[in-house]
Image (tube, rainbow, N blue to C red):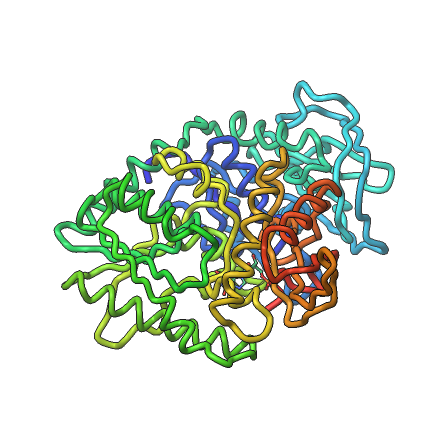
Length: 513
Ligand code: XMP
């Protein structure tokens, strides 16, 4: 790509992705790369600057991840953050002191010299510290920019070389001026233009896709979720009717979802769309199965069967398009491992029959979720798709505890519809990661009119989360809970009790299964 970019070397900090987002928020393209990416490889792609992320290691560990020391010969500005700063000090022959205690949390730094980073900022700044070791003696040519009573080198700079280091984290919200500091680095030191825009991404990607695909055909599994919808819209813009989409209606979707997908993609976009209505087959194969893992396996296999059948109808297809996002790519490339990308592997159409071999097209693999939503908007997708909550591949089957029958699917769909309608009217709806109904495998006693009832229980789950890996239960207003409860009990026959799940993840999961 022929525009400015920043290389972020990932030393395993939990904040590495956040650094990347902050940089992109400034409309500067960046990539998160392995900490040991060779300097020569970087030089070949001419980054405007290099950021060394934080990380959990200590430079004194024999195992500590080291960057290529030749980075400092590239004549490119470098910003070291936390471990990145210590490594910079260490590799450039300064002295790092092993920490007695970890300093963790809010701190106030005093700016002693503005240098290139603190120009125009107050002389005292609240920051977020998280470190054990600290720099005791700076390498030759550096000067201190900021300090705290316990940390003599909270920020340092080598003015001639354009190397800067911060002991604290500018990328987190607890460092309110962090964005200003990053901007000084990106624009003043690196000279980035800040012109990386979604429209530009679309133009570049559509050209690249056309060049790659030529006259061949591309298959895309449309799930109705944000990622696959955006992939389909982007490919449609690039190659029109050379794109063929399959939507598997497994009968376990949210109420009205299949029709929405058909309306949006089939009708409005005019996409070549096959809707494989296969609810009966799925339910047949799920008959009598209550074990959650077994349900997942059956659904996975059935999905492959149905998808492959539908896809064959398109004839010769060379490519398969997938909505792989950047976090999936970097999670699998991260040096420190980290939580594996199992979530997305559910999405992927792995295990297709052997006669169906595809080359992959993954046009979103450089984007974060929020960027995918912006892209979706630019491509003309409606809000209800662009801001859709995640929905598990096995659908309602993981929200029906116990046997999956047509009646129980209808119960949970109807209950869920009420949950959706109520939460969507909240002003902070977009802060909710997921909100949904779960059908429990028990019945309880109730009373309706003069009659005793013995009916089903619905649990409401609502969570906030950044990535689904951890989550906190969402504090829905009592009035909303009340309306959800009374609507479900009054409007959905067969439900006489509604409860609210107040557990966080971990130790609970988001789905009940
Ligand atoms: P759990 O229940 O493990 O879920 O806390 C974490 C997130 O992943 C979603 N999820 C899935 N997504 N296919 C998917 O595409 C699946 O099989 C699947 N199972 C869980 C879940 O909805 C939550 O957002």
